[in-house]
Image 1 (tube, helix red, strand yellow):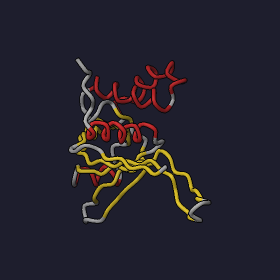
Image 2 (tube, helix red, strand yellow):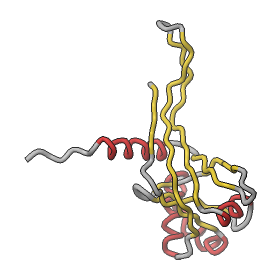
Image 3 (cartoon, rainbow, N blue to C red):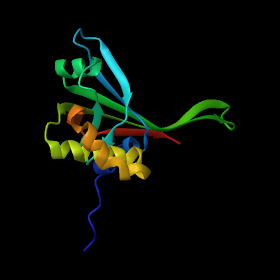
Image 4 (cartoon, rainbow, N blue to C red):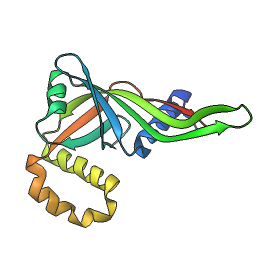
Length: 160
């Protein structure tokens, strides 16, 4: 029996998720209460195929936006290299990018907050994990964790 191959859509989704994983920051775009757009680069971590987390203070413009409307757009670029194509005499860029749409919610469950913070620390400061438990004891109760659940499959593009 032949092993099942992933569908093209599953491969595209997996490829786009890899772009998110490799990007140092993900731009999260949302809508201000007045209707104007607001986007900012955040340090996100992905838990699985549909779940991302970020941490922040419990007040500020992004919190106001998310309370107004929890729908967000994610965009990431994991590679971008300007190139001059000698044979075509053409200026271009080689890139890998991805976008996704999701819905935010505040994480209230203590165990899930710790899991999200552990994932963030393992991604961005893996060599400092011996300090994780002390940091959790000091700051967990004053740290806001936002979970983004994708509401449609992510899409990726590249030019190489």
